[in-house]
Image (cartoon, rainbow, N blue to C red; front, side):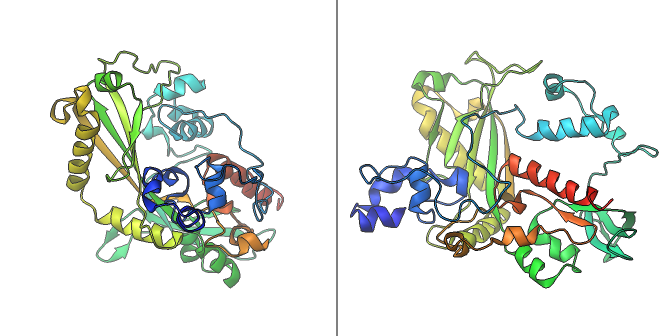
Length: 384
């Protein structure tokens, strides 16, 4: 998109500065690494009068499961997608999540001591990392799968304390790139396809404000700051559900949400994601806090905001392995050629091991994760 604006349309690069972060929330990169076609689809300027078709472009219908056209509907739980996980836990282990409705699940207090009880049909064990998955015996009917796992980060005396469990069938719903390391028995071509996936590094930061009168005084709900560490800042979505009520008085405390896509303009998208991951792991909280306070002071100060007085707490959620990587015509030659994308080969069932996760669709949204989780389970149920 940037090259189209500066070369084809002969515009000064400075005109794109306000749009530097406009594609971060979807792709994790800026206009330098986003195809002009995708920028057109997002409604970015420069395409008026060109007679372009707003329909999907070549290579965008490979996956029979993925989005057949997104609906103009957006729902946001107060805790994001965590409510979906809590609802699934309630269905699997009712004792662990009191209540019976979506509304009361938002404020229900989880009973972690009920997640992993002997004798229950479903046992959820937190803080455990899978180390190895392999077939023990025939991979077809009558076989089983052995899973070795241990405490996440639990190493004693240079040795990992591992436990083993066996199952008739297993779904690997983890990041595709780690699957070849824990399940090396997969065919070489499938391991290569799995390794093609890369995660988009992101940061979601929540700032608890004493009040939000500055937003009222300035008449804004959020703002974009391409020159700061966080590129976007906005008041949390005004969602009230069940016993949870969103604050409606500017004198009340509220959560301010900030985001950052850790990208490196000028590099191919996949290299930008790798560089961004290294940055997130290396940047200290103190540096993030200083930049954040200065950003809010400069943006909201004219409305009476004082960081020292009005900031009650800061939580920085670094997400080095965030969104699933979505293919694009600049970096993935198979996309325009109509060839089979790596995610199709990567998600093939291997004996009694099925593979899910949004990586299976190369599409970073909840519906993709749900669709491919359903597909993986159906593949295993068909084995009997």
